[in-house]
Length: 346
Image (cartoon, rainbow, N blue to C red; front, side, top):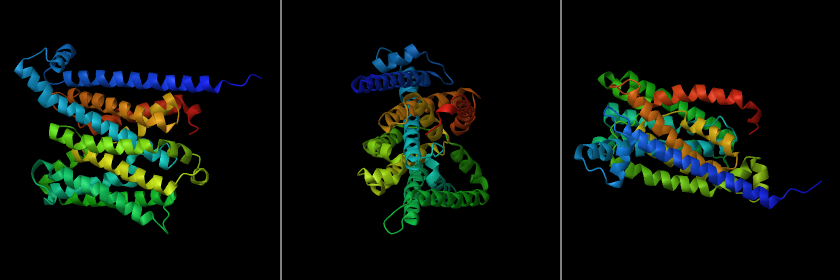
């Protein structure tokens, strides 16, 4: 029997990874241009590209592209990337492909913080950032609460972390329901926020969310190798020199930061952190070194496309993008499960 050429196998794997990243990057660029072009006033992709390069100087078109649509599309890309890589991290930590960023209850905590700002006017800031800052604070606070509850004798068992996240998430979900019950005329604002959307996106929001998402994503990527080892079990990973408790803490903090940065401006948008990691895992395998960057690119493209669809499907009205991600994501996810169930060994 001829021994396999490990060097060639490694080169082939790297070539596949590079090809996937290039294709996903191209898809992201195309979706960005098309996302900017689509709207109440359709602008051709060529014109959009002309605005980017400076060859189109019509003030009205430039204003529509640069001041209204591009901030929304870029924010959508940031939100999609954040939710996708957070989903990868949570599925790795819990060794469960059905896990998502909401499994720690942080989305429910963010929703409660937003409802406090909407209904009671409680916030550390005023104006347009009142709701996002409360959402951000409660998102991170929920993570700390779940971690504190799960920590016993300096150790945080994954099973306890999961149960604590479900319990705390259920508590905050009940509190959000209570806030809706007493909201009165502000009920519509809470419901719309909970549905998720990118309306009203601005460059200020992009400038705030992007550095947080980049920092959290880079931090998660640094622990990709450790996460690979943890997928075979914490005990085995520890025997190979992985500080599993440190990895869990770092990934929880990084996940909470990127999710908080995303949902504070977009509201609750589900399914992205669940379906995107699955799709990419089927393409490139379970190695987190490629799974994380590929999911970032795919999540960004997915959010841009779904937001564009949300803007035109009921024009001139706008459908909340959270509804669209669920409507498109759930059937496609079930299709993938049925078609590729023989690959579900992870």
